[in-house]
Length: 66
Image (cartoon, rainbow, N blue to C red; front, side, top):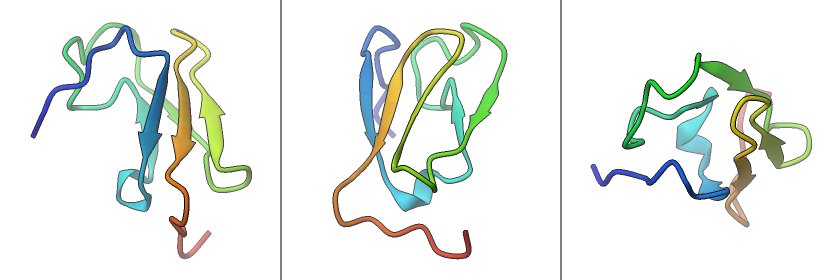
């Protein structure tokens, strides 16, 4: 697992990352703020209210069961 730098302001995610939360376990500072779950299923993107990171669903990814 490669670590993601928390200073990235936009992160591309896949359907395997759902349920999506920030910070993600593979972030360098995984405990930088309280974990918040983000709903990416409706629009394909979600922004963390704590750190402002924008998560975008990778093009072509489908979230099943939502």
